[in-house]
Image (cartoon, rainbow, N blue to C red; front, side, top):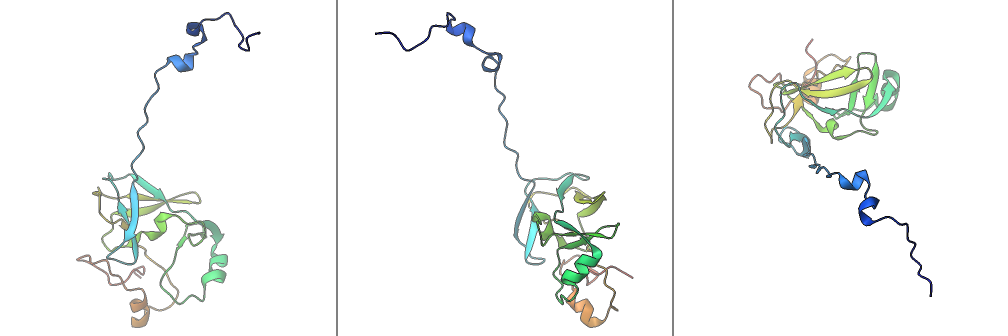
Length: 174
């Protein structure tokens, strides 16, 4: 009976490829930078999962890019203070209600440890000081509304950051 194996005339040693003869590099899984969980400030919050250095880019604020007019059409009658909209300098809006990521859960603080930075039509959150693992990330919302800042409006946009120099609201100062 004929053998079904084929003799190539090569020894096992000659069959080694350069890939199999190189040592493989072990890649450590990267630890997450952030984690989302309940916040003392408001609802959900974003917390450092490891120490974050001053100036470090932490996360991109993602969402669907829409015009300011489209945002007004979609959410203009919304009477809540809960928003996942971020207005860019070019009057485009990142709508994190749609295709948003964990960055949308970063809360406001009057004593923030982060700041948003625009790069084209993209928005990134950067650390403005060193942040320890376990600290909640925050930035100043500086929310701009066209209405007069009445006591009722200020209550609607009340700040609960707990900072010593709290402004009492996350509305932009006029």
